[in-house]
Image 1 (cartoon, helix red, strand yellow):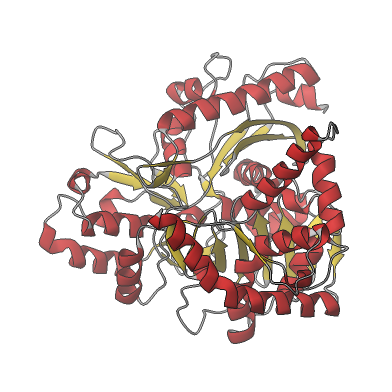
Image 2 (cartoon, rainbow, N blue to C red):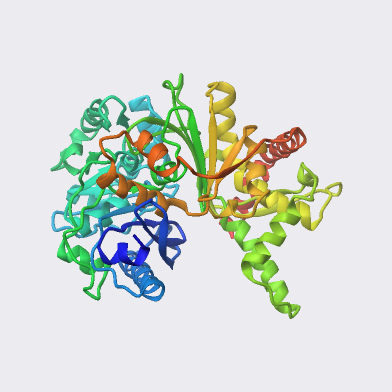
Length: 533
C-alpha cells in the first residue's frame, strides 16, 4: 500500500517525542519506515532558579508539531490525517510534575536539568541502598518535603512529562516501565515500582502525616505492548485543534527518551547498548547481572520491557557545541559569506578530525547546567575553553575539544562500568543528530569508550521513531517479546556502519580526559566567579 493510501485508511502509526529543544512527530508505515515527519522548536527557561517549560509551552508545542506533520502529509500525499492505528507519546525522562485533586499543576514543571535535590538524593540513596539521582521524580518530591513546601500536602498525583501528556490525551494515569524507572526504583522481578522501597519512603515521611501514601500518587507501571488507553475527544482536540483527528485511537504506554533510544537502536537485549546524544547524552547497557556496588555515576533503569539497564546520564552534550557553530555562522554573515547551517556543521566537524588526537591540550567544558556525574552540583554551569602557552591552539583542535567535551562526562561514568564492574557489551549503537556527519562523532565515541560503535542509517531518526515503533508493537507484536519483534520486524535488513576505535585516538582521548579531570577545579572556580557576580 502506498503511504497516502495507508494514511487515508487509518493504518499509519504515530510517535511523538518531547525532546529538550525540539518536539518531533514521526509517522510510520506498514514496514515501520518513516513516511512523514513534523516538528516544533522549543527551549527550557530558567524561571526563579528552576529549569522549566510552561503548560502553555507543552500544549502549544504539541499542537504545532502535529500541525506541521499534518501539513507535510497533505502537501506530500494529498490526504488529511483522520485516524491512526496507534499513537505513542515520549518525552525527556525524570523531573517533577505534581497535581492536586482537581488535576491542576501545583508548582511549575521541574525538568531533569535541575540539580536542586542533592540532600534528598543522598538521603534516599542511603535509605534504599540504591542510587537515586538528583533528577529523579522521587528526589524532587523528597526535596520539596525537606524544603517544607506548602504544596506537598495537596499532591494527589505526580508523573513525568510523557506521563502527563498521555494522561491528558487518554485520561489514564499510567506510565511505561522504562520511563517509570526514572521516577522511582523498579523491581526487575515484577517490572513495577519496588514495593519494599515504597514502604521505606512511607515510613520516612509518616511523622508528617500527609493525606496520601506514595503508591496512591504514583502512576501505574506498564510494559511495552500493554494497552494504555484510547485517545479521548478532549485529547484529540489537544493534539489536533482543527478537529480533523478522530478519537478512539489506541495508545501504547508513554515512555522516556532512554526507552525510545533503545527501541530506535535495537538495543533492548542483554549485552547490547546505545548512546543517545542531543541536548543531554546518555549511554544505556542492558545488564547480564546486577552491579556489585552502588555508584553515584551509574543509574539503574529498565528497557521498555522491564530488563535492568545501567545508565550514565549527563545533562550537557550538544548545546555548547551548537553555540560554537552559531559563532562561526555569525562570522560568515559578517564576512558576507552565505552558507547552509548543515553544511557549516559538516565543515567544522570534519575539520576537527584533522586536529591532534589529544586536541593539542585545548580543553573545553560544555556545562550550561549542573553535571552531577562530573561533581558539578550547581544549578547553572559555566561553559569554558582553556589552554596554556604550550597548547596547539588551532581551529581543528578547538572544534575537536568541543566534540570531545560532548562525550567527556559520559566517559567518566563508563570507565566505572567497563573497568571496575567489567560489564561486557557485544554491540554499542549511536543515535542522534550529532552522528549524521560520518567519520566524526562516531569515531570520537568509539575512542572514548574503547569499543566499536555502530550507527544505522536510521541513526538520525531519533526517539520519535523509536516511540512510533513501540506504538506499532502494541498492535503488531504478534505475541513476540519486544527484543524478538524489533530484530525480526524492524531491523532484520537494517544497514549500518561500524567503526572500530583506533589506538592513537584511544590514547589521545585518554590523555585529554586526564586533563579534563584535573581541570574540573577550574570549572568549579568559574562557576563560583559568575555566581558571585
